Image 1 (tube, rainbow, N blue to C red):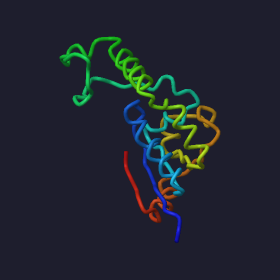
Image 2: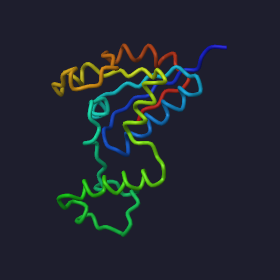
Image 3: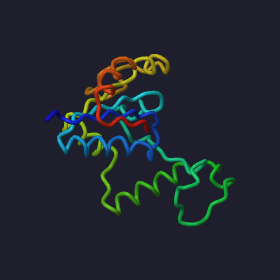
Length: 156
């Protein structure tokens, strides 16, 4: 029986959108699947060496549970993004949820392949030194070969 494959495309760099690709990838890899994540556009920030600046925004995120109802105008005030990020990180820690750094490390330990979109790297003028060392660089065609052979392909 052939090894199952999963291809993920990570396009967002916010805290709430960073968890799904890393959780799905680490889980599939733990099950013995061959997994690749293609990081493009804002998803590239998830490959930076330092993940401490990954934030969550309460603005335009109506499903985000808040401790008290918060009007949109309040969500736009300076400091609300940092407060929401701190609250979410504290809640995750109190519930025993792995940090973003821990999940990314789990993926790397499980041989999940990280592919950075070269076009986006060039577009946003990133340097390879901005990113962790365990990254391959390639275009959509590079990733499409793997995605075309995968059993599961998800766009996040």
